[in-house]
Structures are given as structure tokens and as C-alpha cells.
Image (tube, rainbow, N blue to C red; front, side, top):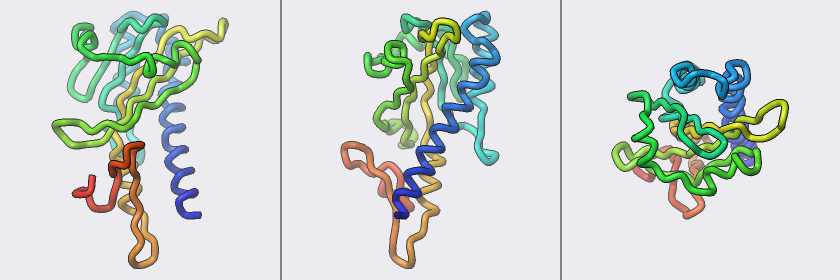
Amino acid sequence: EVSEIAEKQIVNYFRSLEDYIALPLRIGKIMEQSSGRQSEILSVIRSYGIKDRSNIFDEIMLLDQKGKYLAGVSRVSILSRSEYGERRLTDELLSPLRNNRVHYSPVSIDEKSGEPSITMGMPIIDARSGIADGMIIAKILLRDIRDFVANMHFEETGIAYITDSNGSVIAHKDPSFV
């Protein structure tokens, strides 16, 4: 019962992030903007914080309907086309362009910080045609999920933790387990 409640809260957390990203994309008609304006819209999205916390998004990129880089921002800079060119986007990550559905990657651990993250691919659907006009790729830091799990309490001895599909612990009350 407790695990079902926790699962619903985590699912709702990711849905709220999807909604937050989608709103400025629709209102700002990002696909019709100049590269500079696209970067500004991405910067606004990237600065989002839940409960006065920022840096939920490590980086956000905008791609056209063919997967070509248009604009991108990270915690430390505006991403250049050459920086994007060094990244490998799998067919799986680009799947939102084909199926018009949000896709989440498996959890990855940053080599430098040791922090877990997940990458989300979100299609930008053209309202007239119903076809993906482009997509957003956002690297989401899992700090809030880690903190949520760390603050869960089950009687005196119970603990909560989350594992990835390989069984590696990605969120635990004791950070040394991650």
C-alpha cells in the first residue's frame, strides 16, 4: 500500500515536469521562433524549480522533426551545435518523433558528480497536423526523487529505496548505497 502511494507520487512528479515543459512550448510556439528566442524559452524551462529548488533540468535541447539540433541550454552554458554533435542519440530516445509519445531513458549516473539522472524525449506536436514538428530532450536530475525517498519513514526500522532495471540502487536514505 505504501509503495503504491509512493509510486503514484513519483509518476505525478514526472507528469508535472512534462506539463511544465509543454506549456511554454505551446504558448511560445517554439518551433516558429528564431534560434536566439528558442534558447531563451529553453532557459526559462531549465530554470524551473519545484518547492523553491532549481536545477531539476541539467540540460534541455530542441531538435527538429528529423532530429537535427536547433537550440540547447545546460546548467552552465548555452549548448552549441558542435557540443550536440558529440552526443549520441539512440533511435529509442528519438522515438517521440515517430510515435508522438514521451519517452524516458534508463537511469544513468553522472561520472563526475555520481548523481543519477534520466533523459526525457518529448515530442512537440503540431496542433493542425497532429504530427511531431520537433522534440525536446531534457536531462532530469533525480535529486527530488532521492530526497523524497530519503524522507519516507516506515515505523521504526523500515526503509525505502529505488533501483533501476539492473538492480542498482538509485535512491536511498543513505547516499552511500547509491
